[in-house]
Image (cartoon, one colour):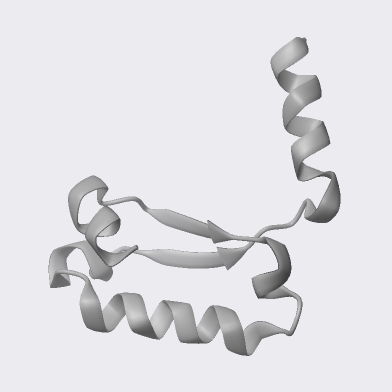
Length: 67
């Protein structure tokens, strides 16, 4: 993921699925790993957040594509 962040330089990384169920410490670990392994310029503006749509994310995306 760090290489992708270095190349694409996103402002936000959204993490979802089973990895986020245990709580915020998983997100904190991902955030810290990206800060350590990304280029400083990519890590400076990077925000890591938990997905908000939960189990309905795939269905909502399919409906949005259909409309």
